[in-house]
Each structure stands twice: as structure tokens, then as C-alpha cells.
Image (cartoon, rainbow, N blue to C red; front, side, top):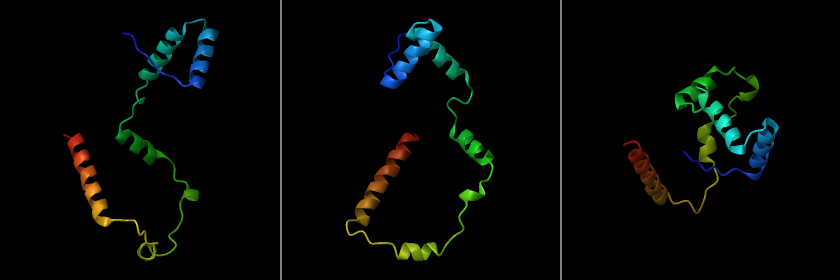
Length: 105
């Protein structure tokens, strides 16, 4: 099967360098790289696998910031956007939900 792949100039140059170093054609090199990558079981992880990997990460105390005030107060005192139209936003949101639901069918 023939397959055309468009690469960035940087990636194409690197691929050509690897092919030359291995004394292979660029097609042979690309086939080997793609074959090796697709042999990996987690090459295309599911969302559940991604979440599991995230959950398995050690906790980083530097990433935790204690709350500094009330979220309710912060939202209540947020700047007002005069261009915001709640009705239009709700219509757009409903369209997006309908699209997402249609994709799930």
C-alpha cells in the first residue's frame, strides 16, 4: 500500500539523515520507524489509560496552593463583560451539546 506523509522541513531533514546513516531509503526508514512505534501497546492510549497514568504520578506539594478566599466572592466581584450575551451563549452551548450527543451515536 502506498502512503503519502507530509513532514515539516525539520522532520524531513532528520529522517533523511537517519536514512543516510543507516544506508536505507527514506521509505525503508519511515516504514521501520512507523512499525516500531505501532508495536508499542500504549502508542494510542485510551482516556482511561491516560487518567490512570496521571493518578499514578506522585503528588507534588509545590503544585498545591491553598485557597485564598471565597470562590463565591471572587465570582461575584468578577469584572462585567458588556459584550457577553447569556441567551446567545446558551444557544451556542445547546448546539455544542447536540453535536457531541450526535457524535456519540
